[in-house]
Image 1 (cartoon, helix red, strand yellow):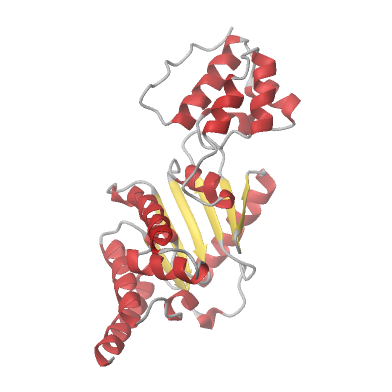
Image 2: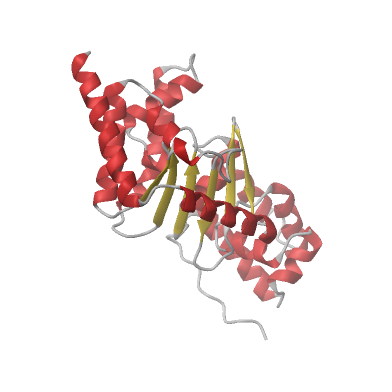
Amino acid sequence: MPQQLRPLDPASSPRAMLGAELRYHRERLGMSQGELGRPLFVSGAFIGMLEAGIRRMQPEFAVKFDEIFDTGEYFFRNCEALKKSKYPNHFAEAAEAEATAVVIKEYAPLLIPGLLQTKAYAKAVFRAHNPTATEEEIDEMVAARLQRAELLAHATQPTVWVVLDEAALRRVVGGSAVMAEALRHIINLMRRHRIIMQVLPFGAGAHAAMDGALKLMEFDDAPRLVYLDGLASGQLLDDPAAVRRYVLTYDLLGASALSPEASLALMESVAEDYAHEDQKS
């Protein structure tokens, strides 16, 4: 006997609404998530993430859903409409998942993570990546990044835990004043107990994530996801074996990093050095 259907929430995001419709039609036919995933060669857990609005529905899946549920082009048309995003294609789905995560763990080897960037720091990063872009284009990129950071406005959720490589503290992005402001912003978040931050010092030597950046995301009712960030590229993973490997990688990074208290002291010292350099200039 099918489960009792949960009413659709008209206030949900379009992606969540599409996921709710997917669940409605699946349960209407009495199918399990695994049974629906089988002809698409995906797991039942992946179907669950689509239904929860955590994963983005791809056009090829939408076409198959329309065939299975005899819904004309309903899923395909809505899927196409949801493809528009203010984020780059390689990051759009990860950004959408991040917004629903209850725990975010990130290792940042070269830059302050986007969630923690100030406006001036983000602008300097985007200008370096896009040297010929107009000011309007840069401002749009910065606005999208700052909008992501609004999830930190909640007093306690999501839990955000960052391991920041010392290289990100030492690389001067935008000048000394910008760096002083950027680090003080993180220090404020740490002192308010809004984030957990550890610095991975140069003295730690070789470590478990020397190949690049890493983000882990955990959800209330869905499996964990891993996002691997590269140069104008990214990969979102949900394979349980791969996720377990990257969870171990993050644990090893935390074991090699300074304690949150020692990290705070180091960041305060570096921020003060930047402030003094700015006063001299």
